[in-house]
Amino acid sequence: MKIWGVARILLVLLWIAGAASTWWTAPREVSYERALAAVSSGEVRAYQWGNGWDGSERWFEAKTLTSRGDAAPYFVWRTSDQRVYWTDTTLAAVDQESVIVDGIPHGGGAAPIARQLTQQEQATVLNPWSGWLQGISLVLALTSLIVVISGPAPVRGTRWYWFWMVALIPYGIGLVFWLFRDRPWASAEPDPAKERDRGWFGVVTAILANLVIALALLPF
Image 1 (cartoon, rainbow, N blue to C red):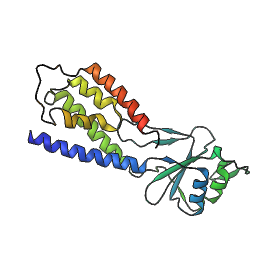
Image 2 (cartoon, rainbow, N blue to C red):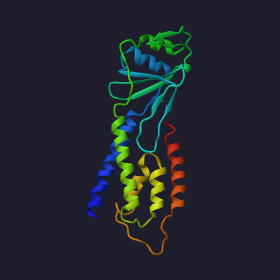
Image 3 (cartoon, one colour):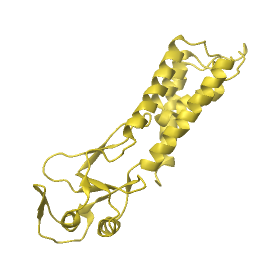
Image 4 (cartoon, rainbow, N blue to C red):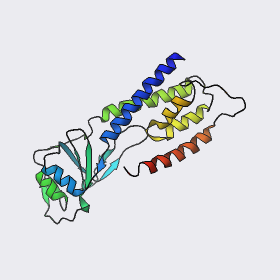
């Protein structure tokens, strides 16, 4: 049991590191004026153009900027403290002639920004910690899968219950809940008078948890 206690501490520390890194480097939308000021002041260390976001929130995978077609109105940049910001230049009330930078035309609100991006680097990866976050996600996911399949049997929920909790609740929160509630991570005694939580209950709980988390993150 001591080994499981040590493993729980290590997994919690790993989860905290992943959650903190994800929060710090998550792309944050700002106003067009803020973006223009960042470019003018030299705050931009690396940048990308795109028109949408893609990425999973199951664990700590960073969002990826996508680019489809010629138009790329999203301006995304990284600062010296590794934080990432973005703005939609189509929302700017700016009437500018198009400018071509590196063979790519930029019109409207994108033009004033593109004209000033002569010293900054157009990056292929804006989040330098993306590999680290993917590694943490992989370790947590594989550990959860192996333990839920072949580890000591839990007593408060079935294996299917914990499988769905870990698989469906974003950011690894389901795993954290398991680490503190049930075997093999936490001390838990079987209660003959109480039926264990079943797989269907794990699915329902995970769906409700997703709704609560989505609402909690709306201000951000």
